[in-house]
Length: 441
Image (cartoon, rainbow, N blue to C red; front, side, top):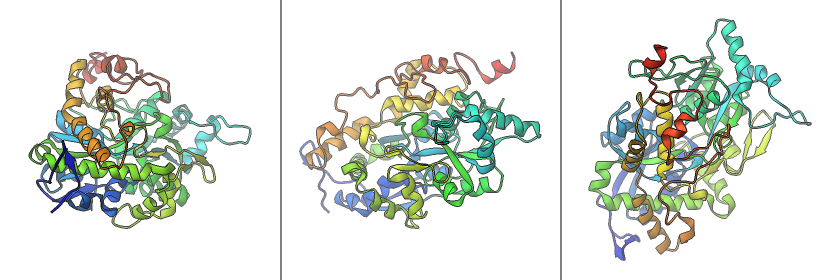
């Protein structure tokens, strides 16, 4: 067996060369599909099988029990598992799979009710981004008719849950709290959020079980193509260039198979480069790959609607969003500690972390889960092999992005001050508040 990988001038070999990785049928699993189809895994002496999973819980359980050696994961999953929220296991990530890629869609009925409350331009088109303030009178109308307003998201610790909650709260709607005794996330909620697997989102909304949802592509564009719903905002508009999925493995697997983890990361970095290079010139080929039944299995036209630089909102309202899917630009693949900490702040905000933690706790968890050391070693190997240059990677970073206010509501996030950030948000837990203390007020 041979491999083109070098570390510190020496050729390295994987400790295990037959690997099975899991994924969910979403376009952001693309680095895995590309690394497989273009032979990047084999270049590293890795013989990989990719297996779609029924839902995020099944996927995580598969990694923990060893049936999967790694997987395309929600960014919140390794963090939640490591701190013992839900399933307890030490999961690490050396690779962030993408930025952006999600949207929030509502049913046609809800869209018709929202439209009178949305500003329009001179051509009669809705002005974006659309605030959840336009949803407030809709929720009130549902409640007046004795009906709860319900929305779907893909998992309690998913980006989608936190993005949907952020959008609702920024518009003045309470998305509900979690407590150790009540894990529905619907305590004090104006809008009831519940879990629906991504591919089932459009059909669940069409059936009236939910009135809208937050999900990754292609399941927002699918609603447009089927004529059953309208995306109202993308996560790029909620938080510009937000982190999305990660590649996760157990800490035990990485410790026992350090070369394998390094080589997998190298192959995934190469795939990410290919997906973004030459101004997304390879995206049409990526769309064709992803449309195959063994990957995402949606129509190529539906996948291309978002993955090639545009996004369709109301039928016929196609807008340019070149960074809707980012796989390598903006240091997308580097596992920043500040990204991990943002997810932890949202877990605290909504009660999944039930009690206050000091700032150091957030830093320690981020360092335990995110592994930029592995990433940068793999990046150097990619550079040494001539696939990229040093400026493509954030050499010299301390793992924290600069503070940003690139959020829908303009609130500034500084990953070095997690508690100050939590306290700056208006809806949700802050300070030493707990769900019990709020109930006692």
